[in-house]
Length: 279
Image: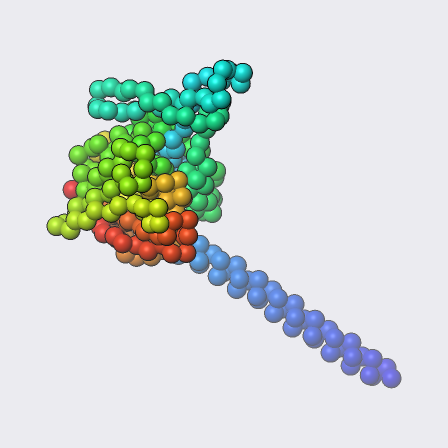
């Protein structure tokens, strides 16, 4: 009886040791896998955005912010008017009125969600929470290693300023009307050229990376589209396809144009994925 008890305890002890060692080994292997996976992905982050460790304090994410004409909740009328500084040339600005049923400064939620998708990429590598900047306040700022604009050039005035630069002439956008039928995007790269028209059924998103012409160490990114959904679509694609884009372009500048059925991200298709010619 004593021998049976001792044998049972020995077997139980051995099973515990095997299970413990197996669990410990599994945890070790899982930790090693996670570490290697993170290092692998970090290499692709570096290709796309630049050396992450060297970007501390050198990243400016730019979102459009709209301001109301009045902060008075009891102002006459059933709508308030937002006022947007709007660049018309290098020397001046003008004001353009839009209407929204709000009496406070506002952001487009999809622009903010797009920013958060890229912010999550950086924070996953221990970069720390990033803040975004007001587009108009960012107009004079060029000395950043990474400037990234969310939202189209009609609302994001920093992006409009960037797209008016000589180095951005590979892409042009007709977006003067209020209808989707007025939206037309044209690219011209290395002898290739095409124009895309947004419709009620088809949405387009643009991602591009170019050299900062005023700061040799800097890069400029843009993520925008024909609607707020399209801006968020581009940021999601950049987040999810980071490794593929890194393997496709390395650390080169590039242009990506996406198309999808409107409000259906699962239908996203890249219609243009091209490196930009080196300057």
